[in-house]
Amino acid sequence: MSVAPDHIEIPELALSVVIPIYNEEGNVERLYAELTAALEAIGRDYEVIAINDGSEDGSYRLLNALQRRDERWHIIHFRRNFGQTAALAAGFDAARGEIVVTIDADLQNDPGDIAPILEKFDEGYDIVSGWRQERKESLFLRRIPSMMANRLISRSTGIKLHDYGCTLKAYSFDVVKGVKLYGELHRFIPALASQMGVRVAEAPVKDRARRWGSSKYGVGRTFKVILDLIVVVFVLSYFNRPLYVFGTAGFLVGGVGALLGAYLTVFKLLTENKIGDRPLLQLAAMLMVLGVQFISTGIVADMIMRTYHESQHKPIYYIRERRRSEPVEEAPELERV
Ligand code: UDP
Ligand code: MG
Image 1 (cartoon, protein in one colour):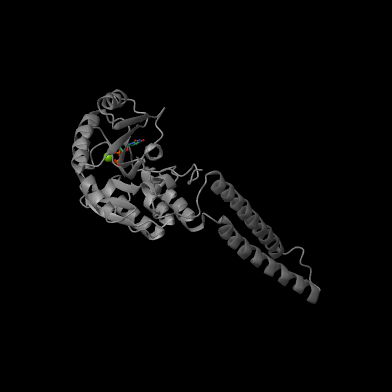
Image 2 (cartoon, protein in one colour):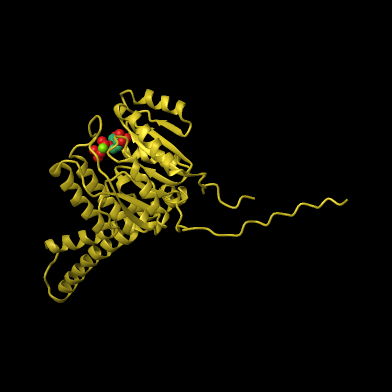
């Protein structure tokens, strides 16, 4: 009899490093060299999972060559470009390490910073986020929007981080297996995971200029990040029971409609006036219908959440650690002479 349900996975090695790669042919070799040096110095058993996110350049060939050279490297080639979040999600699905570190392929993150991040992690955190204290990128296009985004995300999610956008982060196995990503949500993992009751810390890391090639993003990303933030705030506060949001709105709107209707009814009964041509009557009727609509939308959304949780085996609790005594080995029968 198995103790754990099939959907519970268990880490098989110490460390997984997940790297999203889109058209980075000029960085791959150097990345391999720097990363291997850094990881071997750390001395834990590791795997690297490189996700080729539909690159159109030589990354495909270079990554395959690396994989043949080093069996600790695993490559996942996407059919087309699905985006950095999807690439990270694929890496998380494949990861087998107790700690999962994400890092950019362009060497803007320094692989040498993985060691201090792990040190912080070992103090007992579930997520350690890199914090680029001295950014190298342009002030107006990158640093100011990113500072504002970090403030906004920190305030609205309650998880205060200086640098949500830094890819260099470490997560526990349970965190990466527990969050479901889509859109541009990868930067919100610490916020999403706060639902699980995780302990989050920051560690300062270096920011370097891109070595080769150019950034894959423009200013348009800012809008996506803000739209994602709205979803995240909704998810964090009302994900389990959308009925509470819609239902409250429904009661408010419908209640105002009912009050107006009652007023008109009393008015008609007490005075001889007609109310059939009053705009207020239309408003009252509309608000009451709207209230019913809100509540029924809420019920439907609630049912959807129910199937969502059940079909995905979404737990309603998260475990920090398990402790139990090892089963006592049966003493082998002593051979009698
Ligand atoms: N990346 C990806 N898919 C994309 C865009 C980017 O896998 O659609 C990878 C990219 O190769 C890099 C990382 O995500 O390793 C960060 O991208 P980039 O350096 O362009 O972002 P920036 O550092 O400018 O924020
Ligand atoms: Mg970059």
